[in-house]
Length: 135
Length: 135
DNA sequence: TTTCTAACTTGTACTTTGCAAGCTATCACA
DNA sequence: TGTGATAGCTTGCAAAGTACAAGTTAGAAA
Image (tube, rainbow over the protein chains, first blue to last red):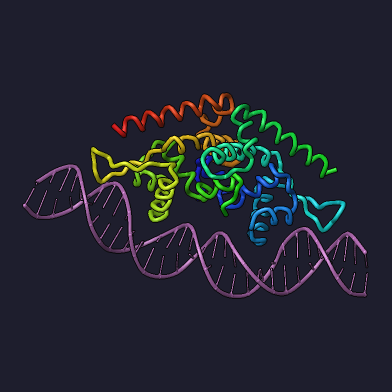
């Protein structure tokens, strides 16, 4: 693809069928490990692996070893990754209003009233998790 | 895929590598016909056709015959489609800050200052085009 | 030391995409 | 009225990406 358009360049990184769902798992649902993410939707493990590696390579996620259980790898969003929360929130709002999906209705409703507050709230939670995990 | 999560349900509709670029062409760049969109990026015509049909089927776009040239089909966003402008704007902002893409820097900058105003502006332009084309 | 679990990896079938060429309807012009 | 050009759309086939199942390795737990 490779375009000078920022939308096209962004979709080169996150514009496939799984990447934004993975980022949703990590940043909205607080699922930070390979097996938690794999269990949440029916994503094939080789695809999940590939996407996590790409996201790390793109500087959107960071991979750290869990010091409490060194088998476990924790995938945490970088600042660049946190910057995608607004996109996820917009998708929740649109999906809630325009698809039969019923989940996260409170988030959608709260976002319609004060989007910035909802985004700040998720950002704060993610940063809190990062601080806790990287200790 | 097909989930009860509104993000997953939305990505079922628009979460592939081309659909959001097509919507960007239509709603931000005001390219309303098959050939205009086909020319803007290197999208294969069979894929473009498939995506336009899906978007029409999903109620995101509407297809009308150009009365001035009946060969031409004009693809216009519905209200549901217009509702995706915020997603596009977020992608412009993120891509401008986090990818080497250089286009649309003014839009990104203006959105950082007053996102709602930029969205309203694009919405107004699209509605104006729709009014003109459907006459 | 055996068993279990988490994170990968590999192989193979299947689905989607990309490319090139073609088709049909309509328009522009002589 | 006929000829060429253009817009939208279709088809066939090769290449790429995805899904499913099974296997491997490192570390934990008993």
